Length: 173
Image (cartoon, rainbow, N blue to C red; front, side, top):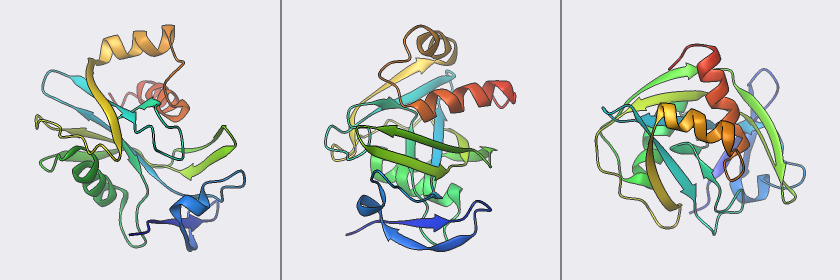
């Protein structure tokens, strides 16, 4: 089944849809995305290594789940859907942290260009990674995560590092 992204203008107003793989290129149009930082009761963050078969940022470590809302779907609904699909987690409390985050980054000729609300979720469910989406996972304390990205930012998605900085700056975590 083909997935589609919702193309938007700078005011986040929908302009139409485009097939996800076709949308991500050297000239990726602005579209809707989302990012989720999932924590457990130990205050550990779940990190995900993206599948080696992904078109964008294969093998790169990132926050718990990233994705694209479907037309008519809220970012929180999309986060629940992708969390279940990628990690098999369905029992999660999710809240909006940074509703207006936007980024544009390029790697290996592929551009990410998204209005990408950032959310925080909580769950103690045991992740069951979907191998088509996820290469590996690991839990890390928030304190250790902050040290890790300060000392060794290579290997992590640029949006994840920037979102972490914004979450701290805006006292969302």
